[in-house]
Image 1 (tube, rainbow, N blue to C red):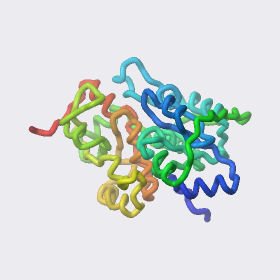
Image 2 (cartoon, rainbow, N blue to C red):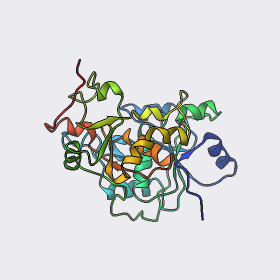
Image 3 (cartoon, one colour):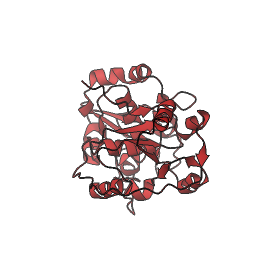
Length: 286
């Protein structure tokens, strides 16, 4: 029986792929308004830039409708994969400059959600790669469009909508995990969305608790210890994970998969949708 492919690839493993001239596609999925400018100023050789806002999301005029980064239509993503030269058999590696905590994990989740198993996130992202000796380049990589259509019709990882989350917030049958920083969860401060606080019954597991000080993932056992109790009490289909806009929640789903847990539900609309729809909000008492 073939061993399950790790969702994380180490810098030295990527170096070995290069040295052995093994074919793969490298994706730069850093986020932010100036992401393309940062890519242009320096990226890993051979990497192709993918933009969160225009390619990995279908942003609506009002974030109350699906949050700040709702998923694009499945056909749009399939077309993007073809444009990138990705077929169902392609080995794909993705990185960002936020230790995987931004768009790299989002791209990984979307690939897994179309049943693409040959997808890995570079551990430690751009920063650790540089420390490992990878040189940055400004040379643009031209993707070779695939002649093989990527045939997908639906997202195959579990998603829940705001109605399911509202029901979960009123009972103890499910657990809602909020992966934002504690200050945002507690309503002390909110740098992005209009209202501070958290969903009733949500518990806080900040996504960056999966990382070592250098930005690399902690060991699988260390991550398991964070979530063991939660998964002992609830099956994956009873667990809902969310963040601010459906991006960093994917980092937690990546960490859970890495640690050997089944991937639970993603609430893509996340806090950005919930907080704009007149839903109950909990804040820490001052």
